[in-house]
Length: 94
Image 1 (cartoon, rainbow, N blue to C red):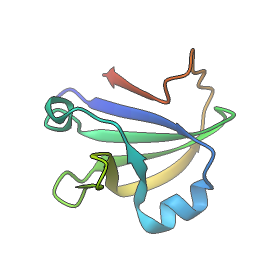
Image 2 (image 1 turned 90 degrees about the vertical axis):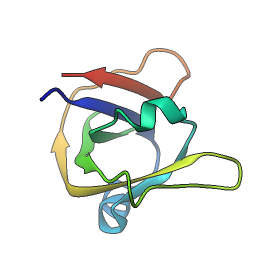
Image 3 (image 1 turned 120 degrees about the horizontal axis):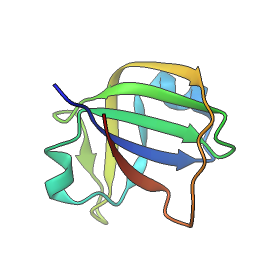
Image 4 (image 1 turned 120 degrees about the vertical axis):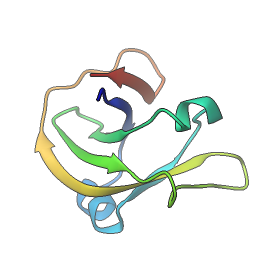
């Protein structure tokens, strides 16, 4: 089974996000939500990220229609990720 990953870039503390098992709220289209299987929350420098399994049933929309990404089995890993441009959200298929 292939993975469909939403990858977001944040200035938030990864340890705090890991403890809550959720990210802040993001602009994510409804048709993408049904495909997402995993999340990656990358620190702003691109040197560490949280990897986890997307929890669709626990994720929720804010009043301004942004999606709070809930996840399970999260862990922090070292990485080398570069974000091009201003958009802090992107999608990857593996």
